[in-house]
Length: 320
Ligand code: ADP
Image (tube, rainbow, N blue to C red):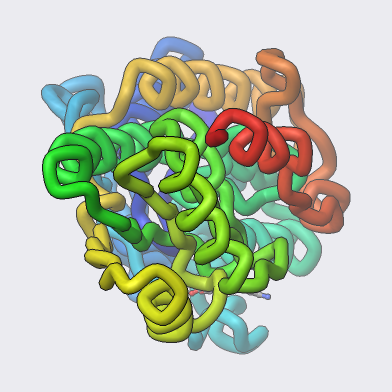
């Protein structure tokens, strides 16, 4: 019987469990033996690998996090350590690997393909949505919905107190969480790492919107969008109002996955197993214009993530 190992790696994201469930069940349906590797590449090195069954993934579809756990393993970047790790697959006759993770996890998988001929499939799983080749990564939709729920609450109190409010969201290099939650949350300003913004412009907008009769303002600030204190000071100086700051932090990582992430998990998983059935190796699964597709893993890693300029413009046009 052919065998597949699956793992989650890098940052966790809601929907990873739904994807593990789908991989195990569809893998078994397609007559594979499915193995789980714990804590990503760290578990591959230490040999924490066990067979999974349909009941191993009961009651996890609705849970955030990952039952396989996840980790970052610096060691795995060393070729000699990878050679040891691969023995833990070889001794179990496993030559297929599906990795749910981000850019770094995909790079790790690619080395296993190039150096040892393992068939590897990458499933994009990260709340940041920072992989350029796919429109969506697992977990992004849920994270944005979590931010939106916070924004809804903040809007109530903002309106009551006529406040200027800053919501700090995750996104060191990629501003998608800020962009999508800012647009969907009807926020006045969205600050993302990819677009340099003069904070004085933001302050002027607050003043202008007050003249237009707007009594509260909500600014979504991605953590990599610049110096937060400078933004606070600039607004305070120009408007006389001290903005309140809400940092959402790791709340954005957890929670029950949304319908979008659960369906995406099922589609990514079945597509990944079908690629292995066809004997494909080194592919990345993604979604483009609502269609699931796959492409060579090395090519996928070369696609640069760009911010959606149209969407960014929309946030400005809709916040008069
Ligand atoms: P993400 O997958 O979310 O981007 P990381 O960048 O932390 O997370 O990568 C996860 C793990 O993948 C790393 O801890 C490391 O074990 C492995 N990895 C990352 N880059 C490489 C690489 N260039 N070669 C081999 N392994 C890598």
